[in-house]
Image 1 (tube, rainbow, N blue to C red):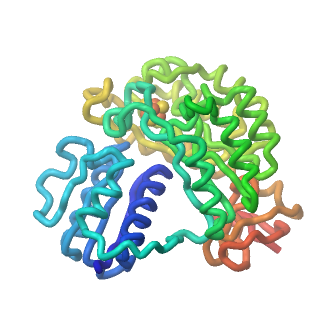
Image 2 (cartoon, rainbow, N blue to C red):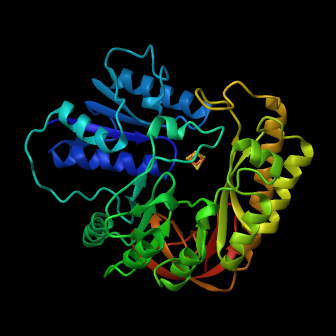
Image 3 (cartoon, protein in one colour):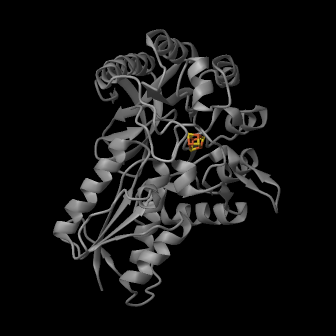
Length: 395
Ligand code: SF4
């Protein structure tokens, strides 16, 4: 038997893949141990230069304290990203659906112990799709993850039932480009999957990790609004609020289309990703991003200072100085903080149901963060008392 630790960097898909890795190793009878394990797995990210730097640092650190290290995830498929690391590091350049089995096979099973592994206590991330067939000019993900492919709807629903039986209260449907999900054999679309997944007996909450605005159509909005377990939250990447920059990014919408498609989601807590300092983004283009975020009623903005990625259309372009990127990033984060606080203030004196996912913390129905006392893994009814830096404090 080996002991192992698994760390991940990056998005919810990386989180889901890391979880799959933990399950595969635990299923083979190995024991998870956060410190001092024999084997470390680093599920890496390469979406920005900084993400690669952090992934390399995590792998190098793990190589000093573990006998064997496996680097998996997006960064592992980026040529050269992990060159020069010590000999006990294995870079697993495989598609995500094969990586866990490869690592588990390489570590070596001691026995099939047949445990029904349950490693997360509250929220389960269930992958429905991987890869992306879009071609945004800045994005390395289609190169490292490949074209889109979907799981069968029946397999997704079976996994959700299994998660519910394990005691998970909430399921997050994850994918690289979720709207590309399509089970061609059964004809199941994302909207139908949302309805069927949301109706799984015993499930309290269902969320989508993120969705491109092109896929926010009438059918999906209907499913989100009419499925009682789906909370009023949606993460819809904007990337820029300037049409010229969006065109250069190879995004498939302009700002007015983005705003129009979100209109039917009035009342939802909308969150987004934005890239700051994309080549050619001047001050007025950046201000249009601030304006679009405000006009769409977005609260949380995940701000990514642009960095060129190898193999992409804009790999050789990086015209905005780092100091300008830092300054714009700070302004956008400040606007996001203010928008979050405005939404949180509306909850003072009102009731919500919070899923406690860590001691003292949890998320409400619309994914607003709450500070709350309650048993981890439970849904607790709360009333907002005041707004703090970190969320709404429950009375
Ligand atoms: S939609 Fe664009 S940004 Fe998102 S993964 Fe696909 S190519 Fe990358």
